[in-house]
Length: 126
Image (cartoon, rainbow, N blue to C red; front, side, top):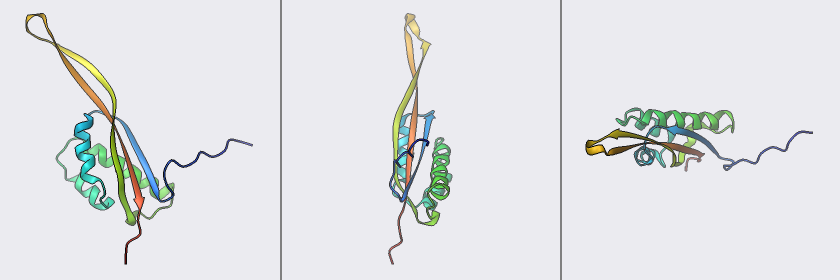
């Protein structure tokens, strides 16, 4: 018989991609995610390509994955895709330290983040 198919987590005209363990703080990643929210995917890809922020390459990879999921898994038209949602979450934090003066210990935190991008197909208004 087999198992029943899992229900979709997104709507019929949406596709999603998620990237975990991005080595940057959620606050810095959210600045890049805010840059692409609500834009058409071609414009978002070009903005990420020419962005000076280090993490924009990883965000671009996640967006390309969401576009590929929309095209191959859900049969959506790539030319009509818009970045519907791009949100950031916290992941683990590595705790490191550095010896300081007079026997103290300076704490260094190295945060990780995760990024979720949803793209939606919208029909052009005539």
